[in-house]
Image (tube, rainbow, N blue to C red; front, side, top):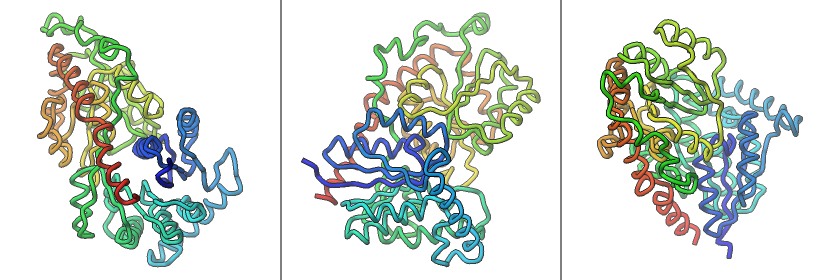
Length: 427
């Protein structure tokens, strides 16, 4: 028996928002009718969405067109977005300026309002107006999952148009919400300061990986084969595979510090693997960093983005996950990223920077790896060198993290908090 209809709304694509996918799966599995409204973002995500939807039972609806289909709607949305941007630069208080945050915002408002539902749940800031407006028009419930502290996502000036626009959207629509969640305690505290209500914290934990792997040996192919290293055996051991991923590979994510730290390693028995959509011109910057730090290019490996379930399986082929956030803005200091929990679920040792949220998480789970001072080359280099030198410690940490993910830090446990809340407000 269907318990109700939930419309999830995003200005991106499901493949770029694993949190939305997990919620859509959860609600569907528990009897809700689920519709996801989304907007075209890029080509790789479109291909990943096709693979994703082959095994999903919820409904997916694209708005605002795309370059490969509904071209007229695509360019119309771009034109309206540009006009809204011009309006916002004059005044963010103008009614049209709300649609300047994304070309998807106005089409999402229109599409969501036409679909009768019990709950409209926005999964990013550009989708927030659609959830609130649609809920009001259909006498339903509105919700928002603030995965980030949106008004401080960039180090832009406090007077920038983008920041003022984000503040206006948050101040206008968050007070109207019936349901409000976020992804870390620190982000929850920041929003509580503004609105005197504390969002429920739902961390970015991943589903258990047991179904993806046949045996623990398959998950950890070299975990027991590598001996405790000595100066004589270190270079004879397989290279330690360092892994970093995000939706995009670019500046201000700690990659530059990683590249600079590698020059200080006593041994060159490592590989650095980066996964994501390369920002224009950044590959040349990476090659420049490699040349400056005497890093052979064959040690640097670039991988294309992939959908979340494949990413977890792929991550398990590496040894050390790098959560190298720099704290370049308030949101970056307060966020607990997908990568941190992916590393744990896939059974990697973790080297993480001491941003506020990551330091707090490390204090609770200090066995996951090594936490380093976020602007210290020597501290990061020492952490990497530790796992190159001490292979038994590396294997033990990988195995312990895998078990931690299977037993405690997983979506199957975390999602029960969200499900109880949704059941309560709808039923």
